[in-house]
Length: 258
Ligand code: BTN
Image (cartoon, rainbow, N blue to C red; front, top):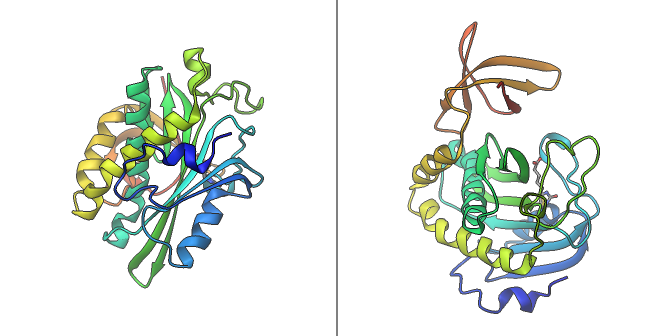
């Protein structure tokens, strides 16, 4: 386990992590960060936990993580972006994580629409974005990042699709070091949100993403749609060319058809 002091020492960020809460155990860092954001805590506030009793994933799924193995954190953001652009904040987190993994040199890094970062083709990180709006104004976003670091065993159901830094590299890592690098990277990218240059982040995310031009299936609940991934819209929706024409999708799970 790491302490708050372990993280803060040498963390020379400007905004991200200037206020930092560290817990041994929480229901969910996103739930906690949303409570703090509702209470008015500032942009850059970070909630970290060693274990979550009710970690949440996209589409009502659970996010399971063994105690003291991985990185579970949530960041409060208050960017001046439009409601339409709010979903793009997932890409801000994905690009930050991709940069961290790339500089660790632990395998091939890819971003996968809408919210995953892959290592050697398997999911190593999931991102859960939760936005709060008042009318058409974004009040805050909570960006939750679950990054698998030292866990090497995964549930049977996901074992072939999930991985961790340790599983791919054969080495264990000090999570505190990775947390610091990740907070520095999110801090470095933050001005791109403030200056309305979020498109630069989206462009970098596209560079990390390998599915464009490829045949994919998109699963939404019981429905599976086949098509070619063409790109993403300005609001982050996926554009697919299907037999019935071009369509856009806001959510779903994508598989590249080899
Ligand atoms: C997904 O891939 O479905 C998103 C998973 C997001 C998991 C992280 S772990 C930290 C934060 N707290 C949560 O409850 N969820 C996110």
